[in-house]
Figure 1: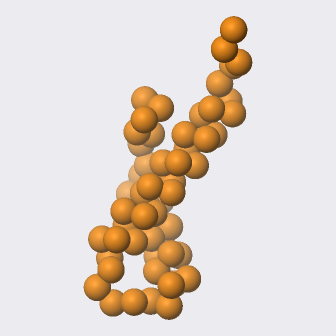
Figure 2 (figure 1 turned 90 degrees about the horizontal axis):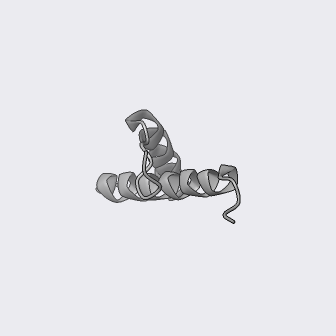
Length: 58
């Protein structure tokens, strides 16, 4: 798994996209935008977790 693109299961993306959609008052016609935003958020969170778990560089 590369740091640039951690694998995110589609079910996790779907759940986050749904949460974002609900928080934004359920607008119609923005499925792709919410999916991409959810994917971007989850990838950023995973990269941050990986950086925290990585041993310090000497």
